[in-house]
Image (cartoon, rainbow, N blue to C red; front, side, top):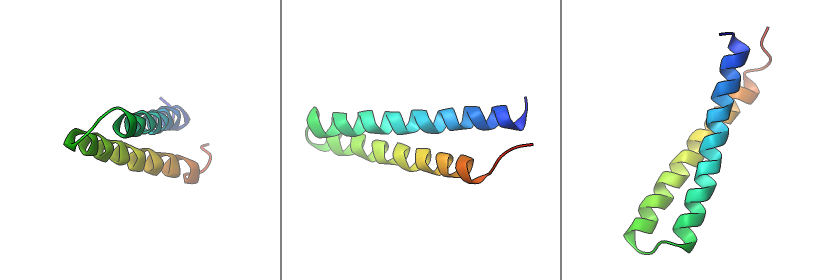
Length: 65
């Protein structure tokens, strides 16, 4: 597997993390109540940070040969 293809799959994981974060944040704000809402929101923000770091890495790693 080439480096370009590996970067593509890593970026897909980052995009998936960001989409999952959006869904979990919406779920925790509109459907859940109490402590469970805070737990789901915590995981959502963890996914958002991880997804952002992955996308940041992919964008600033530059083009592959």
